[in-house]
Image 1 (spheres, each protein chain N blue to C red):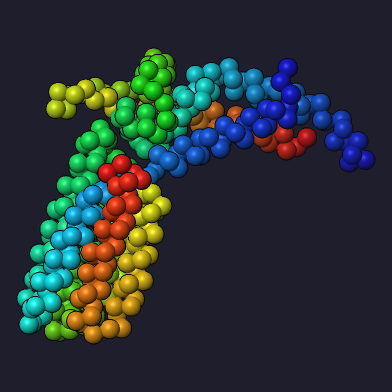
Image 2 (tube, each protein chain N blue to C red):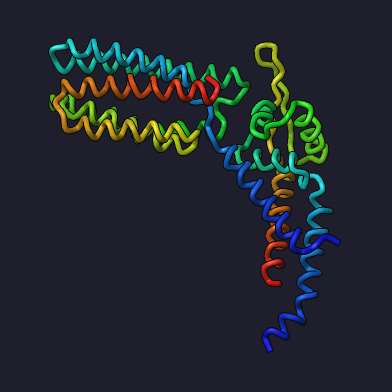
Length: 120
Length: 194
């Protein structure tokens, strides 16, 4: 009887899992990409990081960090302060409130997706 | 439509990536290797000088001068390594590192004062090595793996030093603050960029 009940709700759970994934991708299209997710996660853990620290941590190139950080900045997920130290430019990034909320939502969606998978 | 199993695998991979990134971010990587080597060399000199002193006061004065010098070299080394790599000295991992390192070291300073007032220097070498090692182990939780390993070696040496006469303890200080700093300093400098 229990088996029959599980069989009945299985298509609904499958649909829920697909829906959760679709929502996650639509909502967090920005932080879903690996490099941007790395930047947001690193800033969530550290509070603030310089351009060089992010580059070293994520093992990538200057151009890559610049492109992805700019996209996150345009979305209002991170903010950047540019200063000069010994005539050398220094960019320091912090996660904004919107960025933290986006990461939390993304994690909630991943959690919901895994929850739906387990129930199948 | 994406297959549900693939989506589950993807979700797990994304969560794992977030966790690993956050863990790596939490490491203080500016522990100075070459600074450690310099501290080790001055410590060996201090041990040789301290061995010639006839009373507890002068012996302590030599080691306290060495500790002040080591602190200055250490701070300079950290500043140089962070500055060179365009890193932040007061990042969250850096703050956690120093906050964890300080309590055992401050406890050591207070206990040293009490022992000095009782003219009991025999346990000082062991106590210094043990508490410094404890500070390095706790702070090392926020740094690269080799740092807590170095702390454990200091603690082991401290345990040995607690059971030997003060003259031998002085040479164990040389082995710890000198030898261990030089050995691990070279390792850190070669593996972790200076």
